[in-house]
Length: 271
Image (cartoon, rainbow, N blue to C red; front, side):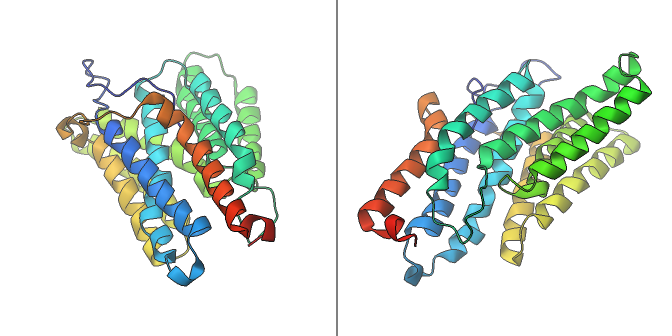
């Protein structure tokens, strides 16, 4: 989903080590693919629904965490980064639409959720500076907030993971930044913990089953702990994921699933 340079240990005190994202890439692709294979490809008689409700619920909060992390610490232009994610989503949309679904309603794939979430998070991150420097007047602030809320409300009906999914990256960014920069004083730690709570609440609300909720919340909690300092203990991944594989896997695996369903006859039958 991302197009950021391979993770490397940060040398700047304000930039944490991103070595964990090398592991995150492999885990995200494995859990996402497991989810999609169990949902779209494996026969219902195999009763593999548990895989999507457990292993599969790791993927989205992990992708969102990596996007939020890179948007905060590893890119100078988060909006350009969001556009690159959007391009992957546009390429993937047609094969994504071929996946069997209970409803014929148009849903935009997860890259649209990630791209819009990063755009919103970047806008939110920039607000304090714009207000402090006087470049954003009260009237303009009200108009921008109203427009952002309106876009969030409308887009939530069209994207995967809906309204809660769009909130995850902005909330991640707020929490990760505060957790990383928090000092040793109790007020700073309490403030950081308070900003982490909304991430966990939204993670719990994104899913219906208790199993799915627990895996999603646990994944988000692990990501927040990385921002709080656990990133320092993460070694570099032994085998870095090839950049082309990382960029191509999302649309390519949908193409492969669609081709298999077509050969098997299930795509034409609409099963």
